[in-house]
Structures are given as structure tokens and as C-alpha cells.
Length: 197
Image 1 (cartoon, rainbow, N blue to C red):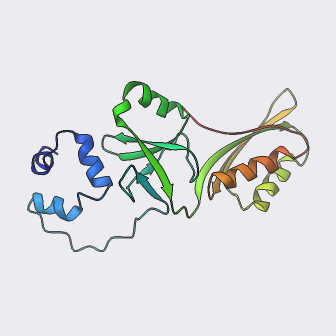
Image 2 (image 1 turned 30 degrees about the horizontal axis):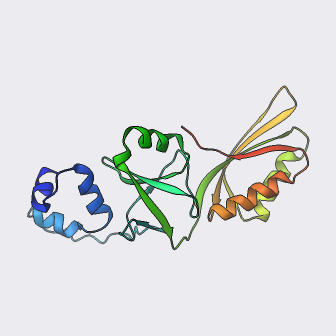
Image 3 (image 1 turned 90 degrees about the vertical axis):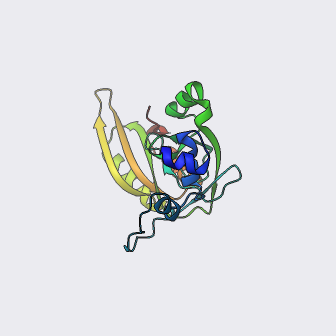
């Protein structure tokens, strides 16, 4: 890291991550700095299914935060994390709020571009516990092309059922349509997106 900073004329580790994430510091340049011949290995295409633009830099390498599972179309911010590069968080995520309060210099503005593919999001449903409610909820997901990756259900002594689903969705608008359809089901009392601290 010190050699890269010296050669590139930068001071902070975070700046190295930003250079790599923005593809201004390539693998080839890193190999060159350390006198290493580039490995003769075919790499799989790991380009993201959705592009992210950070300020004046396009197509930035990033990861989606697992605490809040942001979707294309959501309002988001990026956090420069040591050893991980740029992490995209949903605005309002408790973990993002922590960075905004304690490390604001590591938070950057980002925008979604060219959204494609499917992304995980967690949805929680509270409903009156009755025969068939789980089937109706699952059927609603199927009607709206929301694949269920995981389901956790629990019956409470109050006569309610709490169901939590990890879904595959295209974007924030897709999630909005699914949540609205769930609210229209008989017996459903509350529906929310899950964001973990």
C-alpha cells in the first residue's frame, strides 16, 4: 500500500481504494509497480449488472451493503471502507447514519445507472393467522415475478403471523409494487422493508 501511495503521489489508503474502484489504477499498473508479470489466467467477467457513478467518475466498482440491501432506483450513498472499496447503503440505513456521524469524509454521493438483473431485498409481513395466508402471500410474489430466496414464518399467541421473506427484485419500483399488492390481501395488517443495524 505504501509503495502504491508513493508511486501515485497520494497520502491516504482510502484514495488508493477510490483509484482502484474508479479503474484509474488498473491491475496491470499494480503488477508493473511490483515488477510482477500478469498471470496468464482467463478471468470470469465480474462486471456489475448495474453501473454506479460517483460524482464525476463512471462505472465505479462497488458492493451492495447486506444490512439494507439497496435496490437500483433507491436513494443511496457510498461508504469508502478499508479493504472493501465502495459499499452502497440505502439512505436511512443505521450503519450509514453511523458513518455520516463519525466518518463523514468516507461518505460519497453515488447514482445508479443501467440497472439490470435481480437483487435481494427483505420484506416482513404481519397478518391475521389464518389458513391459506402463507399461500396467498407466496402467490402474490409469484404474480409479481418476485422470486423467494428464503422464508421464515412464525405464529404468535396474539393470533397473528409474522413472515419474513428474502426476495429477488429488479429495482425499487418493483419492490413498491410488491408491497402494495401485499397490503391489499385480506388479513394483512402491516408490510415493511427490513433494514438491519
